[in-house]
Length: 303
Image 1 (tube, rainbow, N blue to C red):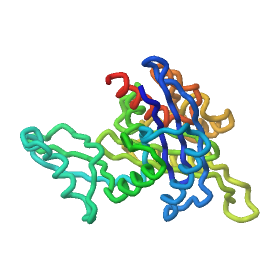
Image 2 (cartoon, one colour; image 1 turned 45 degrees about the horizontal axis):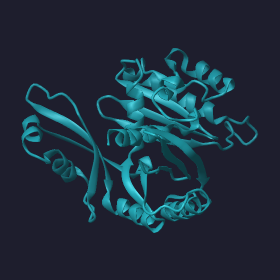
Image 3 (tube, rainbow, N blue to C red; image 1 turned 180 degrees about the vertical axis):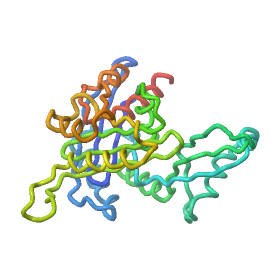
Image 4 (cartoon, rainbow, N blue to C red; image 1 turned 30 degrees about the vertical axis):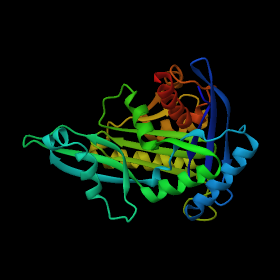
């Protein structure tokens, strides 16, 4: 089986995981990240191309069209929501994707629908569906950059769907769930409502002052935990929402802040539950890449 590459693209860095096979078992050959010098959305494609050039030159052997799986920035996705009769999507091939595209803001290049979540139809037989789509012009630009570096785009993932898979692994039955995830000096908040709403936001460490320049510094984890606690207390539907962190992903001081602010809503997601079925060196900061790696590995094993 051919080696393959997993890339995770964000507005501020590019992660990579290069994998081969030991028999039919995938193995990690190399992994790492490239921080963007120009970490701005308008420079994203330039930063991606330059980092990819360095990756190919420094880390990868000479492959022709190395198969590559890409995790897109979550901001690339466009949300669509429609209501329609259930029998249409069951009886007409491609109806769901056509219907979703009609609900998206017009874009000359069009869209590619990446995921569709269906809910149970109501008494009238009308079903509500949520979808995430990506503009074709973004996919074309990314595909062109990969091709320039002799990499072949074999599949793409939206991080929302990977995190949804992880949230569904938890034992909590609440209709709303949240994960707070630490990566280097940044924190990611992932909020999922089982009825379709999905939100992700990265927070980066920077010094802040409370009330005035002379006030004490406010740590990033403290600001986030206060925001989450305020949301829980002010929204009736969130009072029982579990706020989950991964064991070993934060230090004890950060956990203490979360426990103080969030209280009984705070829960822990054992990292070994992920690692049991994933081929990884066990480093939680590469969680998203390993989720994609596991998915890609399943495709190879089935083939």
